[in-house]
Image (tube, rainbow, N blue to C red):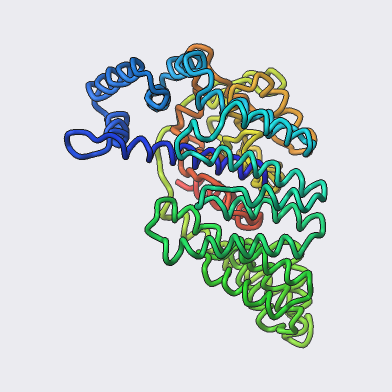
Length: 493
């Protein structure tokens, strides 16, 4: 949760900064300066990129740090990482108490595990970088406070945890702040206190779904509503307040898009506790058909099947029919996504120092998985990818390659990757797409035009990309079925 919150916070920092900048200055065509620069950066015309570079260099004549940060961001978008990095280094010298230095030094707060020491580091950081010096930007301070709140919660100091959890200032991030602390309190058994925070989080989120839906950042604040409702329902379930839990899980279910395993799992548990076996059976049945059921849900399904049907007779045939429904759905959806474009060629080193080139696998179907050790969704997808690798391990015409990339300047990237796959006993061949020392780019991931990870490609025997998919929605059964279908469909002429 901490890493997830940190990621969300950093995204929101950028979003808030962008909006603040956009509102201050406008171009002649009434578009915002930031949007104007974005259009120039995205243009295919070389003269537009040249014009943008000239404007960015002009920004570096400014005495305002925000102008420097804008220049840094757009040089990065132009894939001039060397210049972007140089601007960052110069910024820290020119603005020693500015935003970049502030955001770098707050890591001391994030990284300290002991709550009391973390608080001391926070107070020292706060004194050096008082919020009043940074306009209306509070998200960085909110995340630092949240780090304290969750640390105190993990240590069982409820009073301090609630104190810092309630210090969050950014309205659209309050739900995330409260939920992060509530999760830790719930783990320690402080269910009542956690429930109060989840209640506040969902009420805040609901406000941005309804009365405040036109506010800036409303979509971000509203998106957490089903999750907060589910977490509160889970706490009420543990407190044996089943009827009240049912109210909130229904809200979660009715306000979520598509089938979500965590919601349906909690929903089914509550229905079972209330003796609503038929409804629970239908809830899990819905989840299995989407390939999202957990092992516990499958165990419950078998028990419920016997209760609803009167015996276990026909259960195996029933499960087989559900698997066929999933397979048919996956293939129908994938038929709309198939492509046929040449894959960029590359050569990388694996963790054992062996040189590996894509051309080595011509005549084989290659599944390429771009990931990083800091990427939560990447790691969540790996149990499913392990099952997929094992499913095809006897097939000499299928090869899986896991490309570690975007290591964020970590000089120990290779060792971190080795340690992670070793500890998890993943049977993966890992290739290292390290930063180019001259450009600062991770060349292979850049050549595949990847904008987010995890991103996976299925490359056919002729070296053409047939499928590209980004992210991980959860559900090992669905993920393995999708990989299987993509491989099979890629092998067909």
